Length: 387
Ligand SMILES: [Fe+2]
Image (cartoon, rainbow, N blue to C red; front, side):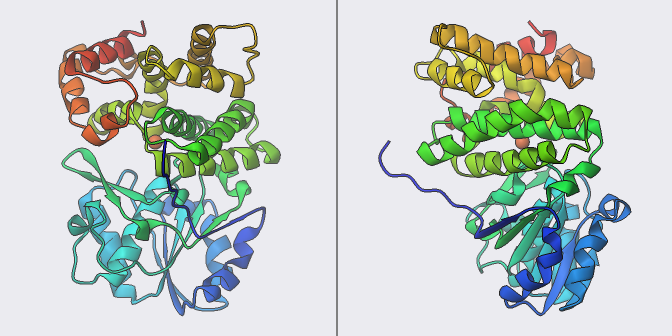
């Protein structure tokens, strides 16, 4: 490991009631007119007005509330068109990962009026710097508030818009916002965050900074996810999960995710399975597959340690198995599926899914153990049967 670098949001403000300060934050960015990007459920939970009202006190505000879950290109174009029509100089995203991704797209569209969203796909394709943006996450999972990617579904495949211009100018995290998530969403988004942390930690793109973010995220998730699942009103646990999700975002936003997300994206998109559910299911199998690689066992032993296991008398191999067992145990406790068969994925589709996974070259290039097509097929067979 020689040189390394990390890119992070410019400013993160964390705490209960932090959204009340949004007017000052917006003014600090020199903004005069804002567009809030959100979805219909955020309005129903009352979170939209908590952000909109203080912002309205200092500037004109338009609202685009039509973000769809896992948005496709057409839906992203609608967010982009709203940003251009609003003639705004600030975008505020209030919602989960899809909303934050669309806020990133909207802020790029506002400063690149001649370009369509498909022109932004790929790495560093946003020509002019995006207008400033403030991101206010309402889930603790995707970590999208901390990353420089926006994901858009193009022909049933998740494609990334990767650009430093996607990074937030300000992130406002009020952990009480995440208390509106029902237990099922709390569980799947929390496991998505865990998968980000573990995959970033194992990634060949990891570095000492991303490792410290990832390990701290793993520890906090292991300590708090079951608690927020069963007691959603535990504020302290919600706060730690919000922090963990952001740290995991900072880790994978720089180190990248690996084969786990490559696999999860294939069946998630095809069978419309929520992203957190797919990423969670894959996680233990991904860890098992990589555990035999030099250096990975040791890393997985550290994962077990951060999850609270006393590994002092274990070999690295035993500790790595313990980490896998802990993740499987967590899936069971959170009532999340652990086998593709449970999700009614037809067995005859496995070769096709393995083929699609093999095409996710970017993710697989960062995987510590090489994955040939036959390996991908075997991994899908294990995920299907649970063996
Ligand atoms: Fe994810």
